[in-house]
Length: 471
Ligand SMILES: [Zn+2]
Picture 1 (tube, helix red, strand yellow):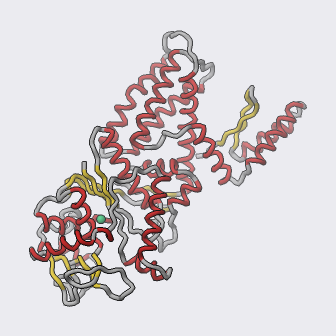
Picture 2 (cartoon, rainbow, N blue to C red):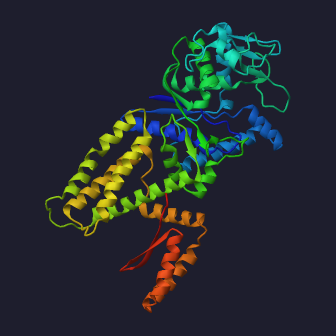
C-alpha cells in the first residue's frame, strides 16, 4: 500500500488538532500492516511558504532556521505521541529540480502558462475533471469563493505553480522563468510521484485540504501523467475547542507538547481516537477528565488481570454463569473490533467494545470471594492477550499498568492542587490515630479526602489510596 500524507508547514508548534491527522494515518498504517499489507507511507514537510517567511522576518532570522527548528519540534511531538515515523519525509527545498521538471511538462502540454513577470499558473479550465474530489463545479467555485481577480491570470481560479522572488531576503532558486520558489500545491504532486510512482493507493490529509489543495494536486498530476493520481482519498476531520473552531486567531489553541506535558501521550492518543475520523471531536476539560477516568478503569482492570493471570491456580471446577459470559465476550472480542475497524476504521466503536469488556472484567474481578482458579486464570490471560494484540493497532492500552496509573494519579493530584507530601502526611496521621483507636480523627481525615476525590483503602499491608472521578 503506497500512501502519501500532506505534512505540516513548519513555522510553528503543532496543536492537538494538527496532531489528530498524524495519529490517524499512523493508525491506518498500523491496521494495514496488521492485516498483512506492506505499507510505504510518505509525509512531506512544507519548508518554504509565506508563513515561514513572515515568521523569519519577525524573528530576524533565515527561513531555514525557522523550518529546521519546527521540523525538530514536530518529530519530538510525534515520538511523544508514539506515531511511527513515515518511511520517507521529504522536504520541499530538497526537491526543487523535480518540481521544475513537472512545471516544464505542464507548460509544454499547455496545462500551464507563464505571466509577464515570470509567475507560472495552472490553467484550471483546461482540466475537464476539475472538482471531481470535492464535488464542486468550476462556476460554483467562482461565484462562491473569495477568488481574487488578478490581471496576471487568464482565469480567476488559476493557481500559482511558480512564484517570482519579490525581494532578495526571500528564499529563491533559479528556474527557466527566473528566480523564484514553488507554489504550495505542486510540491505534493512532485514528491508523491517521486517516491510512490505516478499512480498510488492512498492519499490523505486533513479535511480542510480537500479544496483547493487536493483538488489542485489531482489536476496538475493528472494533466501531466494522463493517469489516475491516487486510488483512495482519506480525510480526517477537525478538532473543536469547547465547540468552537480551534484557531490561532481565536486564541484557543492547545499545543501537542503542552497537552502531553500536562496529561500524557496515551491520554492524547486515546482522546484523538475516541471519535470516528470523519467526525469532529470537541476538546474540553470535561472530555479529558472522561478520558482519564476511562483509562484509569482500563489500566486498573489490566493490572488486576495481569496479577490474576500469573497467580498459581487450583484445579479446574465447572465455570459459573458469569465466567461463561466473560469468557465468551473475550473469545469474540478480536473479531468484533476487527469488524469495527473494517467498517471505515471506526476507532470510536472499537473503544466502545473495549469498555464493554472492561465492565465485565472489573465486575468479575471485584466480586466478593474472587479467588485464583483455573478459570479465572484463563479468563484473565485472555483479557491480557487481547489487549496486547489491539495495542499493536491503536498503540494505546499497551503501557505498563503500574507505571501508567502512577503517572495518572500524579497528574490528577496536580490538577486538583493536592500535594503528594500533604496526602502522605494525612495518611500517616490517620494511621497513628487508628492505632490509638481515635476513630473520630481517622474518619474525619478519610471523609475529607473523599470530598477531594481521593479514596483510602485499608489493606493488610497498610493504607493505599486511589483517585475517584466524578463523571
Ligand atoms: Zn499536500
